[in-house]
Image (cartoon, rainbow, N blue to C red; front, side):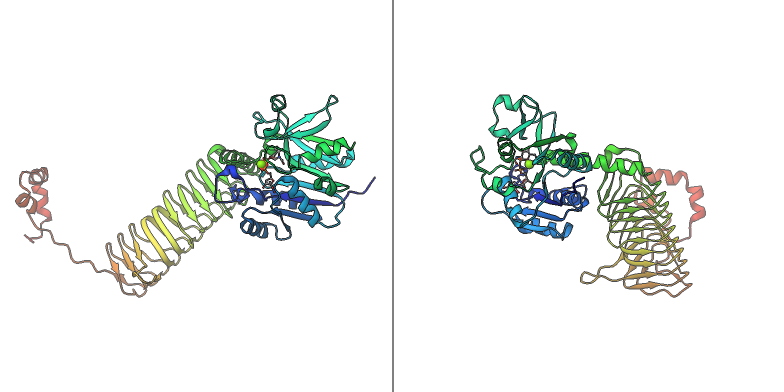
Length: 483
Ligand code: UD1
Ligand code: MG
């Protein structure tokens, strides 16, 4: 058996991406939470190549920053003003110096390529002794792609770009996927010999295939499924690629023991981690570095960005970013968890509650209609309905500290900075401006006055006055002579 030749991967990412009509470089448009290019770099890294090179030019610095983030080991290669995929590979091969072996070419705008394509490609190339092996597919609509032209024996003869193709060639449904495996022997010379005599005036990498055939070299091809190789050139193709990638991610989680009730309305980034027996309900987006522990139930109608959901926690109709939700905690419905929210085990952030930079201790609850910001709450405390932390004095943010086993009344305002001690009670409607020592009851609401007969005197003839008059027998028992 001949030894496996060393492998270099070249990712082409220098093109303009004109059809995206975007200020952002095409390869940095995102799907499944990562720039398109990062998906391709991850695929390349999975092959553990001896060299990884990325060709850049358009919006070079932005693309280079993404490469530095997602594949710091990669060699950046600058393409010059000579345009075309052929030139892109040429400068990469030059940058690889005297590298000898196989060069896998991936396009930065084909994010869906993976092992189902690359494993057969590597095998066919090595076993067949090809100078180049191309990847092909048969999409329902081949327009825009280069067409694979085969000879009478079915061998690949050349690739013709859509723009340069005759009507007969355009009728061919087999397309060039833009993924190639080349042997380095003689490749540099063939790339150097490319001309730009085509509709775009660019040096097409695809023309190397015809050159190799003419010189009597073996050109191989492996066909793969369309979703593996769909290129992204405009926003419609971006959405379609994102959909396919999401389908694959959802399937991966399902097979790993996650219940996804409605895959069509569930979006999970490639970077999300879910344990067994997580249940994800309809209309839910789990994004970025979000994780969920075993038995957590998330959704419906929930968006979590960079959140950590504990085991058996329940998160219902919630929008959360950079929040930690403890084991068996409950969130929602209709909760808004902003950055720095930490809800400990068994705690609750309930209905119409907004939290920010707020640590809610184990078993503590903020059940209804509240804003809790820049706050620490101890354990087993209950924050009454409709409580607001007034954390901002117009210039600075201040902290509210609430102890453990505290019971605050409904409709409180905690005017920060303020400290509410352990075991404190507060009355309904209290505006807490001063620290409350442990075990105290804080009150600052004026005594209630009832002005007897006020409605009949001041709103005569109204429904309220008539109904009050009819009920006056009962009303009299409540009078306290304040009229
Ligand atoms: C290319 C192929 C086409 C194939 C299709 C598959 C050529 C000539 N055509 O067409 O046969 O069906 O991909 O998706 O190769 N790039 C550079 N430098 C350049 C030009 C492009 O690095 O000068 C990069 C782009 O950033 C992109 C990739 O090469 O990642 C492909 O370029 P693109 O312009 O999208 O080629 P297609 O028209 O899609
Ligand atoms: Mg393309």
